[in-house]
Length: 444
Image (tube, rainbow, N blue to C red; front, side, top):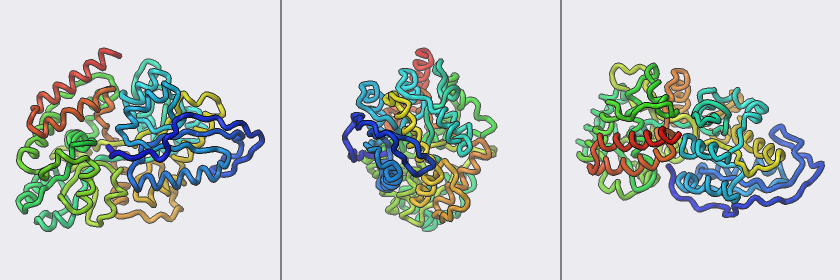
């Protein structure tokens, strides 16, 4: 999802700094933690704008806890996914970390007892008052390995929606009328932009997950919220198949786009992040991705955000998304005091104060911003906030498809570029997804 980012601190080892009895810490409602330890934290906020928010939030936490040293490392999504489980199991990983929900990361770590349940802190700090149960369910795993039920192993700072970014200036120049009210309107707009001599869709497949999000976003926009059970069952590991008319039709559509020049030349050689920068610079009319790019997108006032339009007959289309990677406590928090410190750190990261900071930077927080905060959201963020409310009101938050198995992200990322390059048919792609899923279900 994100580009490479050099770690701002390469120290990975939890270092005890001794006990300071009787110390008092003021801030964020906590005043009793009385020991001095290094709190090792990993996160995936690797873009310039998100890293700046984390620098501010960490500074606030550090100011309120002068006897706690933060050992903070930023890793990109891919690096975090590859190294986290191994680092924690070897004893050299973080105490607090972001972790990807789903079977591949959180589920695998829960199975190996590498994460600590956070239900104690959920109750203590009232996290369930600020985030819905359906969102928190995405961080739950049972002792039997069931996804979506059981103990809670994390909580997120940011809301996430995969939707349709569009450049109003480029569209008007091509004669496209806004707003787009249906999927047919979207398809007609692509044709008009292409006829005007501009590549309609911006994408990069060399690194990142834009192809996955494009395919999943289109497919799930064809599912009404009232008919979501099959998708829920598939993602939560209750069974199902990827071989559906919606998935096959979506795969054929994006493959035809690639064949017929709807992407700019050279998209196979650039990363998703590079594609986003090109889009911000005004190249392309549309880009399908998530709200985690709001900080970059707001630099171009012509860029707006909307749900992927629904086909006829779909009243409340699903939008891929939910929340960003969860804050979690690892098994390296050996003592109750360290677990409590980790819980306090996470509580600040999902606090209403933190949500205000994220809004100021142009991002969509999962925790509601207080009405009296006096925050003036950007036009782009207002569009995201409106979408978030509508999706929650209509139970229309979809799923990241890679959560369905430990290896599903790899299967998607290896095969979606082949689909776009016309080296794999839609049927072959769906067959590989089903084979991956069947192997996982058999192994449970």
